[in-house]
Length: 290
Image (cartoon, rainbow, N blue to C red; front, side):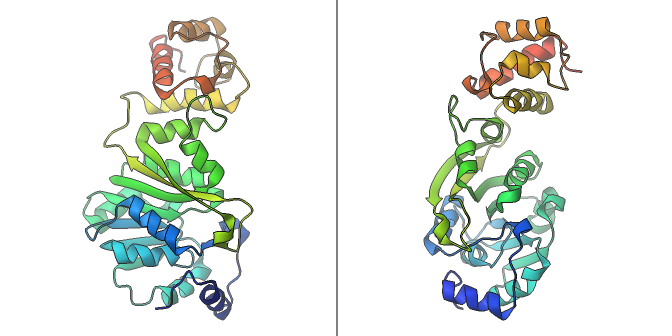
């Protein structure tokens, strides 16, 4: 089979099938074979693994996954790519491609139906327009996911792996830490894609925890986190006053913040995940949630 990352081969196949890129799907196909293998290495793929791939696109990553894993299920939203994938993935007996939106896919059911409920691995070159919703869907699902290895916009990768106090630190950082152990694998320049996007990308691996890092009401915790980071320049107190899930009583919120050991003028980027858990528990004890 032709090596799919060869730009000459890629353009020839796309022209043969009269494929037109659609901006709404954020289609940029990776041409760097080394990066594909780094993704497979980061996922720790073996012949015993079942892999869920999101957005196979041209099939470059799919081909590498098929060589490393026992079986691969690729979910592609663009119907126009199905015929191309039939061609580029021809003969790969352990690959199944379905035309579906991943946001409508029951991932827990996939693990049960395709892998007998055993842990699965996710590996994908995620479209920029839907990166965060997909990551959150995966992390919050009840599916037995062992790891998530994704190519994302470099800016998003920095947010996923940021440290408290940095400009990239925020709600996505805390969600990744709560559900998994994130690691930046490598950065990928825009020139490695066809067509080239306007920004660089990066690969991040999330080793999903057997259970979340803290035993707490997740909805309440993340309502606090979202509110605090929705207004980064505001103090925590002022941000929480605008949280729809919390009673807007300044004295109640100020007392919870101070009892947590924080100055009431502090901003959210100074707090670590453990701090947010402590603050949420204090607010809950004060019956602050509506």
